[in-house]
Length: 356
Image 1 (tube, rainbow, N blue to C red):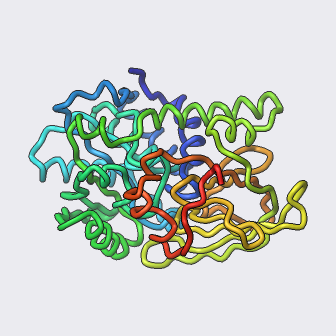
Image 2: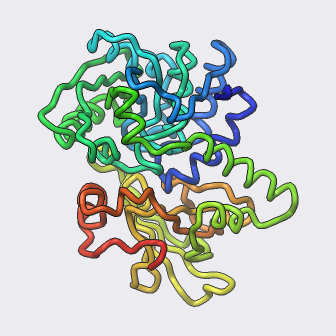
């Protein structure tokens, strides 16, 4: 076990933005919230998933909504604590651990805020190994773990608890509430035992985020290629390098939906890549041919700095490199593909993985 200190937060935020596949919220905002919480309450113990006891009460905490909204509607640290305390009170259980629902820019750091506020350890794991746009799209769903009871809280102090018939209905009703709350809210759900957490979560996520962030930082300092280092560490492949020439983005039903077009540079000159996203990148098409798709990771990095570019951060003229990396193998089971594969999102294709 080690502690997460303020010194660690930059690297975690940088690495989480990479694993977030364009979504998961603005890492800068998450870093600010976590930094304030750690300064106020002290460092947060980070516990390996394997060390979580069977009878632990593990509670994931996250932000729900469209990442584009967060650019102007900043969340508050009080929201995070309110969501966790509301669910704990409803369950009538004493919490022992906080966890990450997903590896995303803000959603890898929101749990740091909750853990600091509540004085609890944070589990070094998450529910996806990446970010997905809908709350039922977590590996615990594949293990029969219920999303509800779940709490939801906004920045005005409104809060509620949902109890639904299944995890898809949890997404549907919570999304409606989130829209009424201004398209972003804090949630806490998937309360689970330590045994359930060890079985269903992806181990080592926060450590990997910190490692990726440090790798990008050290590569830049050594005047090396940070993108190549990230590709190598994730066991992925480079898909495309180019300049952003068009972005069509809209906020619909609580999601940031759209597509970005890239014109190739260097070895990709003369080709075009289209990225299609719903909060996160879902499909990458080169000259009309799909190169990668969910459930594997599609990540967009600034070409020179290696910094991740979120879907709300894509702008005309940016020079980026797009890479693909393998998801947790459980996402490639029939059940995983049905839950978060391309056809779920309306693309009539089989998954195109890193191996092509």
